[in-house]
Length: 80
Ligand SMILES: [Zn+2]
Image (cartoon, rainbow, N blue to C red):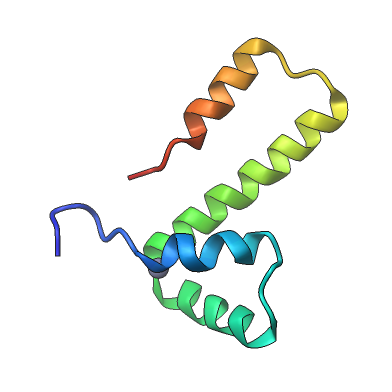
């Protein structure tokens, strides 16, 4: 255990494919179960979800200013 606020190693392993809908049925259930009892992943999941939604709508409108892009890429850096 480190002093870092409970960083979860499952996070990258499960969360990214989960968000990208790349998991099969049993893997998805595992991910959902994990999200249920891991605060870090839950936080991370909500963040990634809203980020994705935001990026999608920003891309569709094609009104991404350089400032916005810079802001997004700074958001992109890991929370940890
Ligand atoms: Zn986790």
